[in-house]
Length: 272
Image (cartoon, rainbow, N blue to C red; front, top):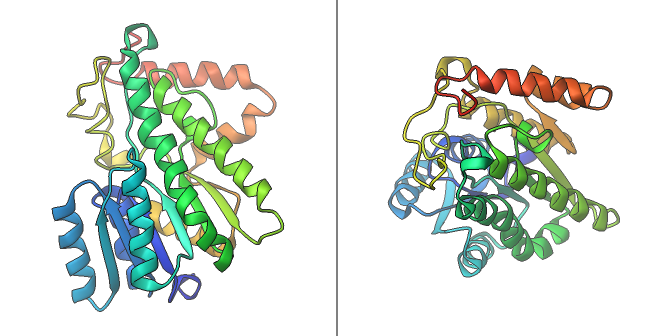
Protein backbone atom coordinates (compact mmCIF):
# COMPACT_ATOMS: atom_id res chain seq x y z
CA UNK A 1 0.00 0.00 0.00
CA UNK A 2 2.77 2.46 0.89
CA UNK A 3 4.46 1.73 -2.45
CA UNK A 4 1.34 2.90 -4.28
CA UNK A 5 1.54 6.35 -2.67
CA UNK A 6 5.31 6.71 -2.52
CA UNK A 7 6.35 9.64 -4.70
CA UNK A 8 2.75 10.54 -5.59
CA UNK A 9 1.34 14.04 -5.21
CA UNK A 10 -1.76 13.91 -3.04
CA UNK A 11 -4.04 16.93 -2.60
CA UNK A 12 -6.24 16.83 0.51
CA UNK A 13 -9.00 19.29 1.39
CA UNK A 14 -10.15 19.75 4.97
CA UNK A 15 -6.59 18.90 5.98
CA UNK A 16 -6.24 20.97 9.14
CA UNK A 17 -7.92 18.47 11.48
CA UNK A 18 -9.66 15.12 11.80
CA UNK A 19 -9.59 12.74 8.85
CA UNK A 20 -7.76 15.19 6.60
CA UNK A 21 -4.95 15.73 9.09
CA UNK A 22 -4.64 11.98 9.67
CA UNK A 23 -4.39 11.42 5.91
CA UNK A 24 -1.73 14.12 5.57
CA UNK A 25 0.44 12.58 8.28
CA UNK A 26 0.04 8.96 7.17
CA UNK A 27 0.44 9.53 3.45
CA UNK A 28 3.49 11.76 3.94
CA UNK A 29 5.00 8.98 6.07
CA UNK A 30 4.35 6.62 3.13
CA UNK A 31 6.41 8.88 0.89
CA UNK A 32 3.64 10.89 -0.73
CA UNK A 33 4.04 14.60 -1.47
CA UNK A 34 1.01 16.06 0.28
CA UNK A 35 -0.65 19.36 -0.57
CA UNK A 36 -2.97 20.55 2.17
CA UNK A 37 -6.00 22.78 1.88
CA UNK A 38 -8.26 24.17 4.62
CA UNK A 39 -9.47 27.52 5.91
CA UNK A 40 -7.19 27.62 8.96
CA UNK A 41 -3.85 28.74 7.58
CA UNK A 42 -2.05 28.62 10.93
CA UNK A 43 -2.88 24.94 11.41
CA UNK A 44 -1.89 24.08 7.87
CA UNK A 45 1.43 25.87 8.24
CA UNK A 46 2.16 24.07 11.51
CA UNK A 47 1.18 20.67 10.10
CA UNK A 48 3.31 21.21 6.99
CA UNK A 49 6.29 22.16 9.16
CA UNK A 50 5.85 19.00 11.26
CA UNK A 51 5.68 16.79 8.16
CA UNK A 52 8.85 18.37 6.76
CA UNK A 53 10.61 18.03 10.12
CA UNK A 54 9.86 14.30 9.94
CA UNK A 55 11.44 14.05 6.51
CA UNK A 56 8.27 14.34 4.44
CA UNK A 57 7.35 16.59 1.55
CA UNK A 58 4.40 18.96 1.94
CA UNK A 59 2.90 22.25 0.83
CA UNK A 60 -0.21 24.12 1.89
CA UNK A 61 -2.70 26.68 0.65
CA UNK A 62 -5.41 28.38 2.68
CA UNK A 63 -8.61 27.17 1.02
CA UNK A 64 -12.28 27.83 1.52
CA UNK A 65 -13.76 25.19 -0.78
CA UNK A 66 -16.93 27.23 -1.26
CA UNK A 67 -14.84 29.74 -3.24
CA UNK A 68 -13.90 28.83 -6.81
CA UNK A 69 -10.72 30.92 -6.76
CA UNK A 70 -9.47 29.23 -3.57
CA UNK A 71 -9.94 25.77 -5.08
CA UNK A 72 -8.13 26.81 -8.23
CA UNK A 73 -5.27 28.23 -6.16
CA UNK A 74 -4.97 24.99 -4.16
CA UNK A 75 -4.65 22.92 -7.31
CA UNK A 76 -2.18 25.40 -8.79
CA UNK A 77 -0.09 25.17 -5.61
CA UNK A 78 0.22 21.42 -6.13
CA UNK A 79 1.19 21.81 -9.78
CA UNK A 80 3.67 24.62 -9.14
CA UNK A 81 5.29 22.82 -6.20
CA UNK A 82 5.35 19.21 -7.34
CA UNK A 83 4.64 19.31 -11.08
CA UNK A 84 1.24 17.61 -11.19
CA UNK A 85 -1.38 15.71 -9.22
CA UNK A 86 -1.82 11.96 -8.75
CA UNK A 87 -4.56 11.89 -6.12
CA UNK A 88 -7.24 14.41 -5.14
CA UNK A 89 -9.10 13.67 -1.91
CA UNK A 90 -12.19 15.83 -1.45
CA UNK A 91 -12.50 15.55 2.31
CA UNK A 92 -13.65 19.03 3.42
CA UNK A 93 -17.13 18.78 4.86
CA UNK A 94 -19.64 19.88 7.45
CA UNK A 95 -22.62 18.14 9.00
CA UNK A 96 -25.93 19.14 10.55
CA UNK A 97 -28.46 17.85 13.07
CA UNK A 98 -32.09 18.98 12.97
CA UNK A 99 -35.47 18.00 11.61
CA UNK A 100 -36.28 19.46 8.21
CA UNK A 101 -39.48 20.91 9.75
CA UNK A 102 -37.37 23.23 11.88
CA UNK A 103 -34.47 23.84 9.51
CA UNK A 104 -33.54 27.24 8.13
CA UNK A 105 -32.99 26.82 4.40
CA UNK A 106 -29.66 28.63 4.62
CA UNK A 107 -28.30 25.55 6.42
CA UNK A 108 -29.05 23.39 3.38
CA UNK A 109 -27.31 25.90 1.14
CA UNK A 110 -24.25 25.87 3.41
CA UNK A 111 -24.05 22.05 3.39
CA UNK A 112 -24.32 21.93 -0.39
CA UNK A 113 -21.74 24.70 -0.83
CA UNK A 114 -19.11 22.89 1.24
CA UNK A 115 -19.80 19.20 0.67
CA UNK A 116 -20.99 19.20 -2.93
CA UNK A 117 -19.71 22.36 -4.61
CA UNK A 118 -16.35 22.10 -2.84
CA UNK A 119 -15.92 18.70 -4.48
CA UNK A 120 -17.04 20.02 -7.86
CA UNK A 121 -14.71 23.03 -7.81
CA UNK A 122 -11.60 21.12 -6.80
CA UNK A 123 -12.33 18.33 -9.28
CA UNK A 124 -12.82 20.78 -12.12
CA UNK A 125 -9.33 22.24 -11.77
CA UNK A 126 -7.55 18.99 -10.86
CA UNK A 127 -9.13 16.81 -13.55
CA UNK A 128 -6.68 17.52 -16.42
CA UNK A 129 -3.75 16.59 -14.18
CA UNK A 130 -5.49 13.48 -12.83
CA UNK A 131 -6.28 12.38 -16.38
CA UNK A 132 -2.65 12.85 -17.37
CA UNK A 133 -1.38 10.80 -14.41
CA UNK A 134 -4.24 8.26 -14.62
CA UNK A 135 -4.62 9.04 -10.97
CA UNK A 136 -7.32 8.81 -8.32
CA UNK A 137 -10.23 11.10 -7.49
CA UNK A 138 -11.63 10.36 -4.03
CA UNK A 139 -14.72 11.78 -2.34
CA UNK A 140 -15.14 11.30 1.40
CA UNK A 141 -18.84 10.61 1.58
CA UNK A 142 -20.80 8.77 4.27
CA UNK A 143 -23.34 6.05 4.90
CA UNK A 144 -25.70 9.05 4.77
CA UNK A 145 -24.80 9.22 1.08
CA UNK A 146 -26.09 5.69 0.57
CA UNK A 147 -29.41 5.96 2.42
CA UNK A 148 -31.19 9.02 3.80
CA UNK A 149 -30.22 9.71 7.41
CA UNK A 150 -33.05 11.22 9.47
CA UNK A 151 -32.19 14.46 11.19
CA UNK A 152 -29.45 15.05 8.60
CA UNK A 153 -31.37 16.07 5.47
CA UNK A 154 -28.77 18.57 4.26
CA UNK A 155 -25.90 16.22 4.99
CA UNK A 156 -27.51 13.28 3.19
CA UNK A 157 -28.52 15.45 0.24
CA UNK A 158 -25.02 16.85 -0.18
CA UNK A 159 -23.40 13.42 0.05
CA UNK A 160 -25.87 11.89 -2.41
CA UNK A 161 -25.07 14.77 -4.77
CA UNK A 162 -21.35 14.17 -4.32
CA UNK A 163 -21.79 10.49 -5.09
CA UNK A 164 -23.84 11.17 -8.22
CA UNK A 165 -21.30 13.68 -9.45
CA UNK A 166 -18.31 11.38 -8.86
CA UNK A 167 -19.98 8.36 -10.43
CA UNK A 168 -20.75 10.39 -13.55
CA UNK A 169 -17.17 11.66 -13.75
CA UNK A 170 -16.04 8.03 -13.50
CA UNK A 171 -18.21 7.00 -16.44
CA UNK A 172 -17.12 9.95 -18.56
CA UNK A 173 -13.50 8.93 -17.99
CA UNK A 174 -13.82 5.19 -18.53
CA UNK A 175 -11.34 5.27 -21.41
CA UNK A 176 -8.92 7.73 -19.81
CA UNK A 177 -7.68 5.58 -16.94
CA UNK A 178 -9.05 7.78 -14.16
CA UNK A 179 -9.84 6.01 -10.89
CA UNK A 180 -12.81 7.42 -8.95
CA UNK A 181 -13.65 6.19 -5.44
CA UNK A 182 -16.48 7.09 -3.09
CA UNK A 183 -15.35 6.44 0.49
CA UNK A 184 -17.98 6.07 3.21
CA UNK A 185 -16.73 6.15 6.80
CA UNK A 186 -19.10 5.44 9.65
CA UNK A 187 -19.43 7.84 12.57
CA UNK A 188 -15.90 9.13 13.13
CA UNK A 189 -14.36 10.88 16.13
CA UNK A 190 -13.51 14.14 14.35
CA UNK A 191 -14.19 17.86 14.64
CA UNK A 192 -16.91 17.66 11.98
CA UNK A 193 -19.39 16.59 14.64
CA UNK A 194 -18.61 19.52 16.93
CA UNK A 195 -19.04 22.01 14.10
CA UNK A 196 -22.27 20.37 12.88
CA UNK A 197 -24.95 22.97 12.23
CA UNK A 198 -28.22 23.10 14.14
CA UNK A 199 -31.62 24.19 12.79
CA UNK A 200 -30.73 27.89 12.85
CA UNK A 201 -27.22 27.47 11.45
CA UNK A 202 -25.33 27.75 14.74
CA UNK A 203 -22.69 25.15 15.58
CA UNK A 204 -23.69 22.15 17.69
CA UNK A 205 -20.58 22.51 19.88
CA UNK A 206 -20.88 19.03 21.39
CA UNK A 207 -21.63 15.54 20.17
CA UNK A 208 -24.45 13.27 21.38
CA UNK A 209 -22.47 10.14 20.54
CA UNK A 210 -19.77 8.35 22.50
CA UNK A 211 -16.40 8.79 20.84
CA UNK A 212 -15.00 5.49 22.08
CA UNK A 213 -17.50 3.67 19.85
CA UNK A 214 -16.52 5.59 16.72
CA UNK A 215 -13.87 5.07 14.08
CA UNK A 216 -10.71 7.09 14.54
CA UNK A 217 -9.46 9.46 11.82
CA UNK A 218 -6.34 7.31 11.56
CA UNK A 219 -8.41 4.21 10.82
CA UNK A 220 -10.29 6.05 8.09
CA UNK A 221 -7.05 7.38 6.56
CA UNK A 222 -5.58 3.87 6.45
CA UNK A 223 -8.66 2.33 4.83
CA UNK A 224 -8.84 5.09 2.22
CA UNK A 225 -5.18 4.52 1.33
CA UNK A 226 -5.90 0.82 0.88
CA UNK A 227 -8.88 1.67 -1.32
CA UNK A 228 -6.73 3.93 -3.49
CA UNK A 229 -4.09 1.22 -3.82
CA UNK A 230 -6.74 -1.28 -4.91
CA UNK A 231 -8.53 1.32 -7.08
CA UNK A 232 -11.87 0.51 -5.52
CA UNK A 233 -15.12 2.14 -6.66
CA UNK A 234 -16.86 2.15 -3.30
CA UNK A 235 -15.08 1.97 0.05
CA UNK A 236 -17.37 0.95 2.92
CA UNK A 237 -15.55 0.95 6.22
CA UNK A 238 -17.62 -0.75 8.88
CA UNK A 239 -20.34 -3.37 9.30
CA UNK A 240 -23.24 -0.89 9.42
CA UNK A 241 -22.25 0.66 6.11
CA UNK A 242 -21.83 -2.69 4.38
CA UNK A 243 -25.14 -3.92 5.79
CA UNK A 244 -26.93 -0.75 4.67
CA UNK A 245 -25.58 -1.09 1.15
CA UNK A 246 -26.62 -4.75 0.96
CA UNK A 247 -30.01 -4.68 2.70
CA UNK A 248 -31.16 -1.57 0.82
CA UNK A 249 -31.16 -3.58 -2.41
CA UNK A 250 -33.79 -5.98 -1.06
CA UNK A 251 -35.58 -4.26 1.82
CA UNK A 252 -35.24 -0.48 1.70
CA UNK A 253 -38.26 -0.02 3.97
CA UNK A 254 -36.51 -2.03 6.67
CA UNK A 255 -33.48 0.25 6.40
CA UNK A 256 -35.81 3.26 6.81
CA UNK A 257 -37.15 1.85 10.07
CA UNK A 258 -33.73 0.87 11.39
CA UNK A 259 -32.28 4.30 10.63
CA UNK A 260 -35.22 6.00 12.33
CA UNK A 261 -34.87 3.78 15.39
CA UNK A 262 -31.10 4.29 15.68
CA UNK A 263 -31.22 8.06 15.29
CA UNK A 264 -34.17 8.41 17.68
CA UNK A 265 -32.03 6.78 20.39
CA UNK A 266 -29.42 9.56 20.28
CA UNK A 267 -29.28 11.75 23.40
CA UNK A 268 -31.33 14.90 22.74
CA UNK A 269 -32.61 13.40 19.52
CA UNK A 270 -34.79 15.81 17.50
CA UNK A 271 -37.31 12.97 17.12
CA UNK A 272 -38.27 13.08 20.80
